[in-house]
Length: 144
Image (cartoon, rainbow, N blue to C red; front, side, top):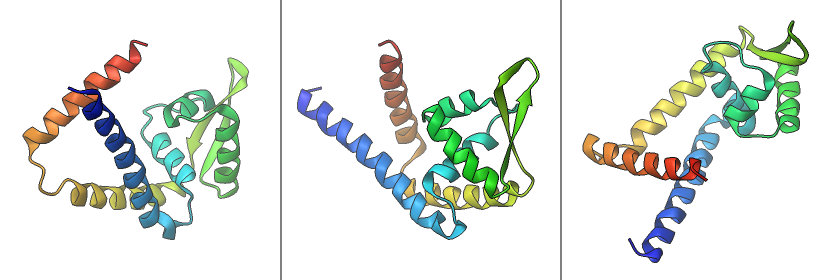
């Protein structure tokens, strides 16, 4: 693959990511949540056990202080709570409040609808091949 092809591919991946997230954000605007907040709620809902604030920050891909501000606003909306960790007084576990569940279900429904629209016309074999390519690129990144 030429450097020009690699450059175009990299630019397309970045553009796809931005455009996908922007469209999802546009569709979720009626829920009264910023992109950062709905992203935190989605990540939090996918943990099997309550994550620490640090684990959640890593999952979302933000710095600790940024997550702390997001959690402050989600706590003010009564959507999450922080719980002390007995073994480590500095650590906090993050829990979803019951009020967050209907909101998360709406976010999931809207994002599922968007995925269905975006994957229209793409057959399973094409998608599997694309996933293999992305997996290899991610693997190469992790080796660095």
